Length: 208
Image 1 (tube, rainbow, N blue to C red):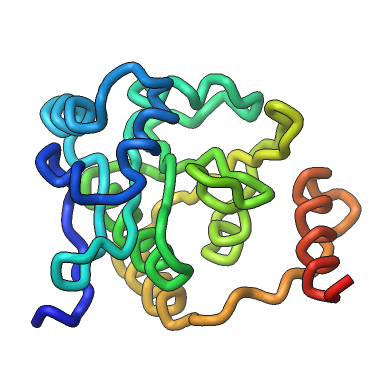
Image 2 (image 1 turned 45 degrees about the vertical axis):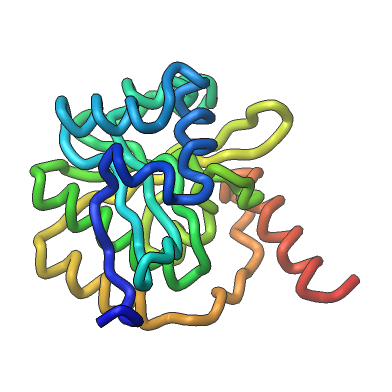
């Protein structure tokens, strides 16, 4: 049915029709190659590296993930080293519900392909072309290491895969939420960037 959203793998031929995808690949590959070439190479050597959610022909959002070696900008963030046998989730784009659906599908895909987990260099301030830290935190991901890049805070987040049943249960819990989480200021021993991000969100919510 045309009005029911569906999630599909991204192929090289899909790139021109997905808004923002070219800019995302250019950012994470540091302009090394066009997005169509990147998807063709990664798909041939590693497997699917992205998902798009559509309603009819409209792209509602997308996810990009791959081994860190295909995303050279990841090496610029002082939050490593990255884990072994994990993929790197570079970006989720879309509204909150779309991103939650895509996040669950990414985890299912990687779990079925034999990966032990997935990581993301998340932006504590929710900057473009990054995954926001808060959406991973509420999804059960664990903070591994925090650092600053170009004067901005980032956190390496990680999710370890359990059984397929556990991933499915997490999916049912996650996609049922439609409101943004209520953020609380972290404990004093939480990473400093996370504390700063939470204080900023609370300040904005207060209307001051």
